[in-house]
Amino acid sequence: MLSDFDEIFPSEDTPEPSSDDFDKQFIEDYIQTQKARIETRKLIQEILFFAACQVASASLAILLFQYAVQVVFTAWLCLFIAWIPSLANLGEVNLQKTEEGWTLRIMNKPIITLIKFISSVGIVTVTIYSIADELDETAKQITAVYNEIQQYEQPQIDQFLPPYFWQVILAAVAIVLLANCIKTARDLL
Image (cartoon, rainbow, N blue to C red; front, side, top):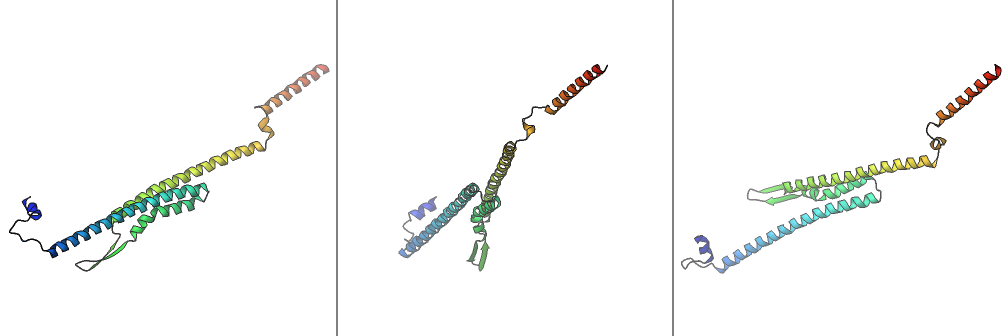
C-alpha cells in the first residue's frame, strides 16, 4: 500500500520524472487506450454482424417460404447466410512477428468461432427444417382436402344411396318372388 502511495506522491529524495518520461508514458497509455477501443469496436461489430446474419436468415426464410420457393433452396440459402459470421472467422489468418520469429495463426478465437458456428447451425437448421416439416404437413392436408372435394364434385350413385340399400332391394325382390311362387303354387293346386 505504501508503494502505491509513493508512486502517486513521490518523496523528496526520489527524482521527479522528466518530461521525456512523461511524454513516453502518455504515448504508451494513449496507444493502449486506442488498442482497447479498437478491440472493443471489433467485438461489437462481430456481435452485430452475427446478429444481423441470423435475423437476415430468418427473415429470408419467411420471405422465401411465402413466395413458395423450393424448400431445399430456401434451407440452404438461409443456412449459408446464418453461417457467414462463423465461416468468416474460420478463414481468419494472422501473420505476426514475435520475439522468436514469425508466427502464423489461423482462426484467432477458435472457441468463439465454434460457438458461433454451432449456435447458427443448431438454431437455424432446427428452425428451417421445422418450418419445412410444417409446410410438408400442410401440403399433405391440403392434398387430402382437395381429394375429398374432388370426390364430391364427381358424384357416384353409391354416395347418395342409404346404407344396406342393395341388401334391402335383394330382400324385397326375394320376398316378391317368394310371394309370387306361393301364389302360383296355390293357383295350381
